[in-house]
Image (spheres, rainbow, N blue to C red):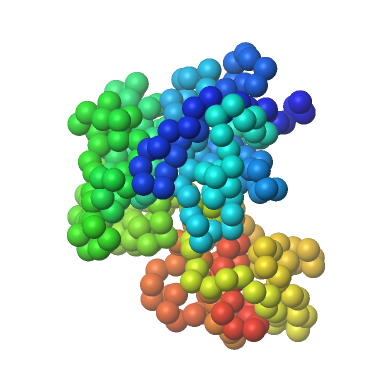
Length: 321
């Protein structure tokens, strides 16, 4: 086994909610697992040649197993479907070591907002926070109780969890603006869920003047990508205004990667469409926004794009670079 990989045996697969299963993993050769931080994930080699990132959702204090939560998306790129249809108890999966791009930083209090399968990284945070005296509360947004994953685990955090079921109508769910209207000093906000929820949380946090450094997001879809688009990936051209150079952006590649491959230095940080570091002005073309950072007014105006995740609806995009 390479130093940066693990071979993990699937010891238990459980149905956690409609379309969501958990996978309990232990070392294939026995022994203890490397420790992980709340908010960590594994890169999992899924049968069929897929490589997917799935959050660790169990207690970081546990060293005998890892637990992943996977939502099956039949319209996705095949990874989650393969996990549900091809992985069985007793199988051995190759994964990375735990990695954390969504760390639980020090705070005097915490507000956690999860939507759907976005509960997974926040569940590991809840386990860690439950052992501290720091105030915290988790708001979990789902369509119905039947689609609410890890209900038994969450029931152990009595008084710290509120469920919000909207029946498919976001207007009947969590009132994000009211939730974030007040903030005590030192409170951190963590959010993971669908693009619409994260956008609403971001806009409310800006409206109510939450410090940017105290607000944290992790983007996901059922395939652990950024915001879901209504378009399939197709090739388009990205044009650099300063030089006139045009580069093809094929399916599976980002504008950011293509620009870097051709020697352009574009600042970036999260590379998941959440932080805004790679925000770039669009001079011509129609962006296909897949980020959770831009407010609705800017998305409609088509004047900016986050090149780390977003693509084009038009045949080309001219960027102010």
